[in-house]
Length: 276
Image 1 (cartoon, one colour):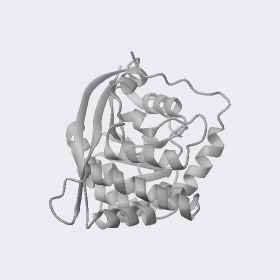
Image 2 (cartoon, one colour; image 1 turned 45 degrees about the vertical axis):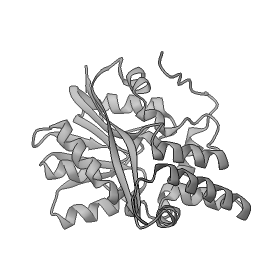
Image 3 (cartoon, helix red, strand yellow; image 1 turned 90 degrees about the horizontal axis):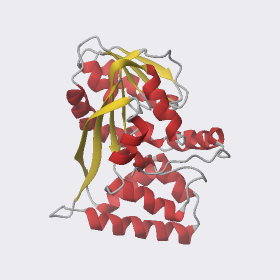
Image 4 (tube, helix red, strand yellow; image 1 turned 30 degrees about the horizontal axis):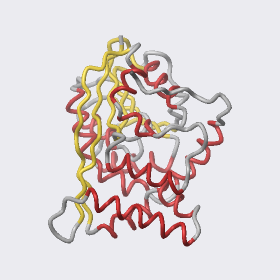
């Protein structure tokens, strides 16, 4: 049985997205995002797109997948609704003399015609949209029949999936918004994309978070990762201490380092689907 994903028709997704935009625009996500570059490279290898293929990166952030596909001579259009992140990606592309088209765009309302792209990709991006069914529909709408959809999404059981859950205990998400980690659930992906797509690959992989210490990780994310920064800002001193303690306890559960540094293996799903 698949996971139920009924949407509350009273949910104000416009207001929620406006607040999310502020959250992702605060801090400096590019400093966190760039550490995940290997996941974009691995997705590009798995997708096996031909040079000159038209590729759309949705909720592209600072451009890990964007740059990976551009390095393979694909014609990449990179989109996000946070302009500052696209600017950070553009600087990276210029440094490598890569040609990329950038466009500010909402993943739930992509400004492209039906069947415009040979492939649509997203690494830890589209999973954060509040209206999950709408964004999933948009991915399928803009990819050509026979084209591919590729994603890297944190799984519900992963360190990051449980980090979302931990933060949600202290700062509950808006009513009607489900966990982003659903995008890393095979049942949910099959239920959501399976009508129009064949799920050709669902691989559970692991990303290694490597930091100087648990304290370094927490302070780095609290400083640069907008959603965590906003969660702490929403709490009083006592609440911040409680959230910090719960995050540190979670880190301790996942830390596999054998020295004073931090090494956390966080599972994610690398997903490839082909549009009918």
